[in-house]
Image (cartoon, rainbow, N blue to C red):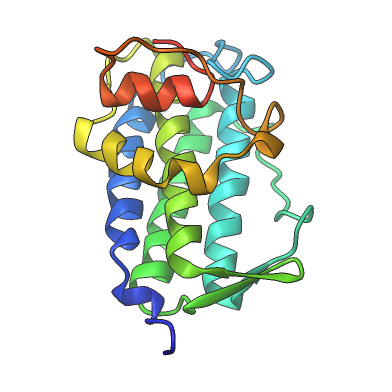
Length: 196
């Protein structure tokens, strides 16, 4: 049985919701100093925005060419830009990304290094990173912008496939224990090494 075209996958709805959530956080960023701390300890806000730009460009590139060269993300030259301009470029990048994935350009199977990856898994991986970094931006901006419970629950269902021990500590922090009464947002963030 052949794989379904990427444009028909349910994970694209997850990617779209992640972008929608994060765009609200980005809207609060222009008035925030570029050196404001974020939950990503090694990155002030400006560096986090630069990283997000590279991630979105990589996902967009993947949809357009059908693969990603490992350890060779698209280059960005935005560190010297102000936060307002970084946000403007990121918002445009997010629109391009959704156009590439939802417009039917993305293949059903991607080449990642020497391996193949189903489009749905790559889309859900992008949704996870976009959402969590959207939360990071909101925290840097002192914006109360919780991850919606349904979005957090859906991302948690993919997390065992997307986050492994090899991702720590360079992609995600070490998991933090949560109580039995933790919300979906708390569980998702704790899994990725973040505290509310």
